Length: 344
Ligand code: 1HN
Image (cartoon, rainbow, N blue to C red; front, side, top):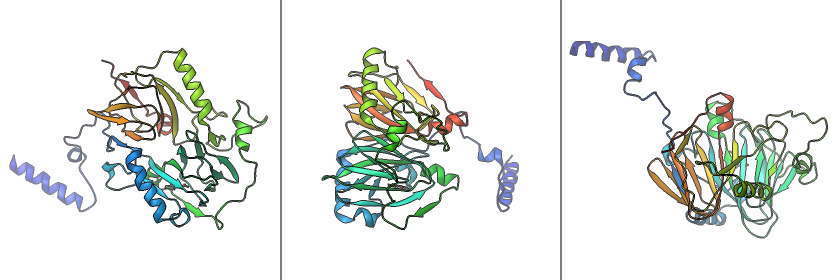
């Protein structure tokens, strides 16, 4: 018996020298029946993070920093720039008069505005104004710069698919020779063309990304609030809508989907789990989310992460609105996405 074990151990050592491994050894004792996300559940409260953002504002300019961002680094990944398994998140500060210089990269971004007025983002020569609750899409390989023409600080949450793009070894980047890209189209041109339940006749999408640049908060919130009044909430997610690409009906970006949801006052949600690890931003109201066996309180501007396949359950003290995003488009495209309702 011992001899057999010794022989096996010697076998494992000897094949390892040739960069080989025995599958039955590597998988011994590993639960292969379900995913176990490495990511940790976590809340970043804005009141805790904002002082660091404000201090960063006194230490570096947006130009010197290129992007003045405080990254929400999930503690599970030892300092890697990841909020979930596949997504990056960071809070970006642009002060009045500043410009975050132009560049492009293969990573896609969704930027959700947390606070402040007067900033714009420019994508391939078109600008859009940012208001709290809006999100803007920066498609893969599009030139983009940001600026703040207002008189107060502006902060938004950058969410990018960088961990996913890195994993696929597909990260490319270029810096534009000037600070800003030339303005080629009128401001909010995309809003007029694609943002009013219409499309230009003959429009054919040439990219796997929504032509809508800015998904405004006001109409989304009005729709959610109206639905919340007239239809019963989902037991897990309340009144939850996904944002869509008006041309395809699909997701705003190929790698990141976005959602807005309303949870009524006193909501005590059923326990659920989904395979897509999700980044939430509390926009309005207060509540808590029980993730696994830990409760995370949240209020306006707090960001929290629910790792994939960990049971979660939302509770509220007030009417609440949550924005969220995840890699669900990728999982669904590959036929891998699952959900499970663990209703008691
Ligand atoms: C990026 O391009 C921005 O353009 C922000 O504002 C954060 C994090 C990783 C890679 C690219 C931006 C980023 C980023």
